[in-house]
Amino acid sequence: MMDNIYTSRLPKALEKLQRPFGLEQGLRFKVISVIIAGLFIGLMLIIGRPFNTNNLDTPLQFLILSGYGLITTLVSAALYIIIPILLPKIFDEERWTLGKHIVHVWCICAMIAVCNYLYTIAFYPNVLPSLTLFLFFLGVTALSGLPIMVTVTIFVDRAMLKRRIAEAEAATTHLQEIHAATEAKHNNYTALAPFNTIKVHTVSLQGIGKNEYLEIPMSQLLIIEASGNYGIVYHIEEGMLKKTLLRCTLKQIEQQLVAFPHIVRCHKSYIANVYCVKQVSGSTQGYQLQIPPLDFLIPVSRSFYRRVLDIAPETISS
Image (cartoon, rainbow, N blue to C red; front, top):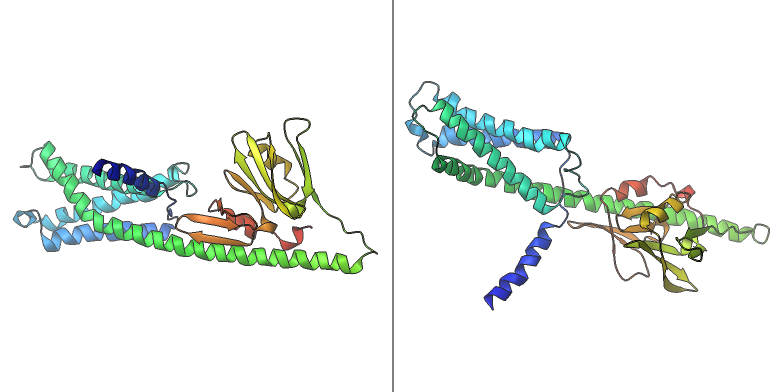
């Protein structure tokens, strides 16, 4: 029975590791973080004198102990600031998860431990290299750096949550402006009828097969969902929600929609009609779109809100 409990908990734990996690992009915050980490380690050794460092008898003892703090700062700067700049595909905010963040943090701790181990051997002639000593430094570095890493992780997570909520609210406000502009344009056409002919813009989608053709009013298209090499088109027909399957990849469908700047690729598996979005919500899990009458939320990429803000209300047509 206990085995079943642990087995059921394991997938949930792995699922949590896969959840989106904020990747701090601000250089100022990163620089301050690595400096504070170095000062914390240096002052802890100089003032607290743990691990028998109080027996260090040399005029350069303060300078030597400060070296551990400098190593912490330099290694953290290399792995926390420089490496993400050099490897942008790996440190991609769109694909960054809690699991990747934990691995990154422990890599920083491990590298600091290795450098402190080599530093100790170099400046302490009586200390000989050994596996026990290396494991000691690995454990001490992990325990010393854990409070800092946990603090930074919590701060970044909360800051990212606050930013996502603000971005979601900004996107929702902009969408409301788009809806208002569209309604005003439609009402203007209606007021001038029958002197004006109301032009209804249609979306035409062509699948691979000759008979796979769909033409619907732009305002009736909700989303398009990827399903392998097929695309599932969710649209309104005669007041009812309908799903139409096209033998066509989402990439191919996206190329057919270049004339509609408000119908955008919001996720690797979804294309959404911005006009039909009622609300954008933000959470630690990322962003979601609420599109009535769909009974599920649409996940979106973290850069989606910027694409929404780039859409001018006057570009929307009925």
